Image (cartoon, rainbow, N blue to C red; front, top):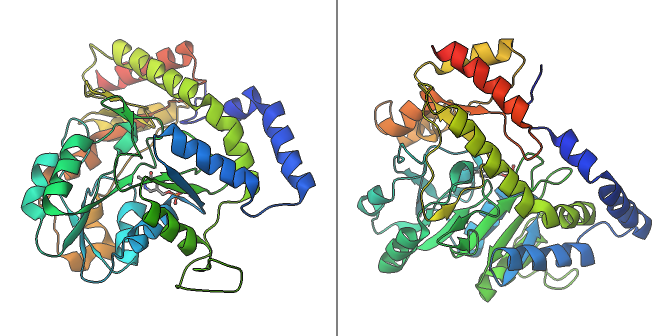
Length: 366
Ligand SMILES: *Cc1c(COP(=O)(O)O)cnc(C)c1O
């Protein structure tokens, strides 16, 4: 039996008619860039995460970059974040000329360790960028309290966690900005690249608005240097169909994650830890084992796809050699990079498939 890490085909088949109709409507309208579909999606995604404003952009990376630029963050500024994330998180910080300052992770949640943030704050610190990694929210009460105390901005990298909740509130709307990616494999994915910034701050929303379209408040009038970073109408139309299903898909992901964790209870692997005041949306189902590489091989040979998130923590990436970190500096992140593996997880995954994966895990781990 072959089991993919993620089965986008299964999702598409379940809503094919609706998606096809939505796509054809946009094509027939010949209105492809921004427009009413994008605006409708912006309103709905903002409302979905309890924020006032949403601004569609070209991808999640740009959502982060435009957030930073809208806040006036650039050369000489420091942003505190985690090294255990996708590279885009800190690429954006470096891209605007600022410096990522890494704190180690909590080995249970894989999220940045909130107890280590304050010691890294100095006069150059401008913001904290929590990443809700694998779909589990960072403790936003603590992050926001630290930010308030030190007058820092908070940019949520919410790319892996749309629909997740902290203390009953959806993430994305909790920081100064929340950044989403609609990359196809995310919990809410489009048919290409897409992203969005959400915020409750009118000024920031207006700045991101300007930045995404050449700094142009009015056609051929430019007040600042911007980007071409728009969400297109086809993607918005597809996302509007899918947004209706997001909660039920996230619930199915959670159910499937619990089935795995139950079946793996007596197996010598560490299953995901879920904080009790969150709704984790399991963008990825990550287990930990010292036999990670053997397990990866056994699953591959059985036709089961897995993923390694992330094999090299960001402080040790070649591109960041000049930041001067070395192995041993952020031990928990480094250990996690050697011990974690993602098992197949998506809404349409069947119980029998989960059982097959678990059987292979059991055999490999014994
Ligand atoms: C996917 C992702 C991004 C970037 O999103 P793109 O849409 O691919 O640019 C940023 N941060 C994290 C944590 C992500 O998972």
